[in-house]
Amino acid sequence: MAISWSGVPAELGLVLNTQQDQQLQQYVELLLRWNKVYNLTAVRDPEQILPLHLWDSLSVVPFIEAESCLDVGSGAGLPGIPLAIMRPTQQFTLLDTNGKKTRFIQQAALELSLTNIQVVQVRVEQWQPKQKFAAIISRAFASLADFVTVSGQHLQAAGRLYAMKGRYPDTEIAELPRGWSLASSHPLSVPGLNAERHLLELTRTA
Image 1 (tube, rainbow, N blue to C red):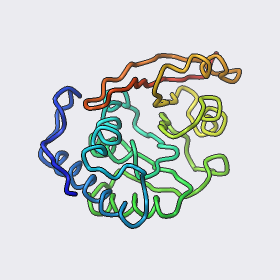
Image 2: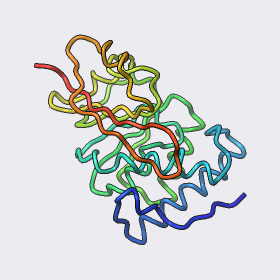
Image 3: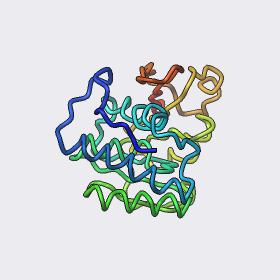
């Protein structure tokens, strides 16, 4: 099936130029093509990929304003690639342990001419980057505690962790490790997705 592209829904409140619109469409087409061979995502229907992956990733764009952002467990480049398209002046590092997925991200960045993306294939808890990040985001971690434990070491002192979640995770918030707290919670409205979505901002406590 081919993607039926009619642009990014106005409900997301994003202003795109022609290049960004074309890059997002090209990214989804590339993802669908690679997915036939490499099984990058379980979602194969083009009409489902848009709300479940692309619109979901784009819903957090207004909140990610840091100069440097790490996408942990990026998988097929979500949300990192859509963020890099929409925030061309910011630097994004996309990290995943799966070689097939990191090769796809590298190819996508090349074909989309995204010079603000760095791709890393390593376990985040074993990684030793030269510099820490102002923001770290993930939509792949099972629990907030795990996210904080393995990713917090790569965050700048005043930086923020951004966890993309479905239902509001009261239990996970209560189980945050000592030294971390919820700074803010943003309910997200994703066009075409009839499910709860939240973006949680986590910071170190004083």
